[in-house]
Length: 157
Image (cartoon, rainbow, N blue to C red; front, side, top):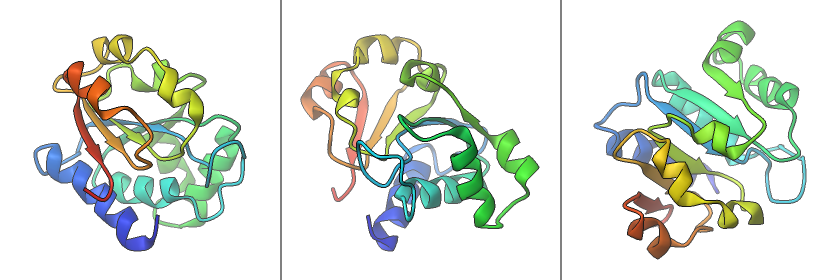
């Protein structure tokens, strides 16, 4: 994602959630630059998270192979807010199901193959309604998610 796409992705989340994400829980699936690695340099997730945090969103991250320490270090490096604020506003968890529990929206930010094979009906059951999915990688099956009554948006549409 280029800078414009990162900004547009975050703006789409905000505009779709009643023009605000204040107090809304957004589940991030993925943090790495690309799948199957733990490299986060220039990852879209960092900048999308930073923008949404500036709008008072609460973010929960599930990131295969990326440690919580790395995620917090990435946010701290931006100097947008204090380390304490980043740790208060961003929660890093060990499963996607935990990340999505009670979320208003899911943002897919890395194209991990495992994301395609989740029990999306189970995920939706534990989300706030209406349940939104913002697919930044056009990874997921739109028809499957829409059939489950997710509000599905892909970047570039």
